[in-house]
Length: 142
Image (cartoon, rainbow, N blue to C red):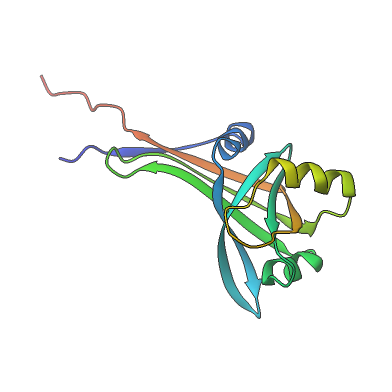
């Protein structure tokens, strides 16, 4: 019988802490009435996920409208079959405050070789997280 795993629901606080412990995730939004997913690096600032984008990006156009998006990140060990996943659902909006933009641009360096001059904040309105952990050992028959 294979080693089974159980799913444990994470608290909001633990989910945001784990999300903040990794630098990479996926943002899910609607682009021309179809689902779109983009891999991006991020940082967590309180109850907001911060990402950077470029002028003209479909995600920025969606954020300009204040759309609801989902942001997902995880850390799963495929060999041990343990880890966690977190999804934040909330409204994406461009950051407009020049001081915050400068701070985020300093703290969040893009991974791609293109100007990423826009900063987007995703509110953590709904946070769900799950840990995949070894299941407790079943009692052995006597």
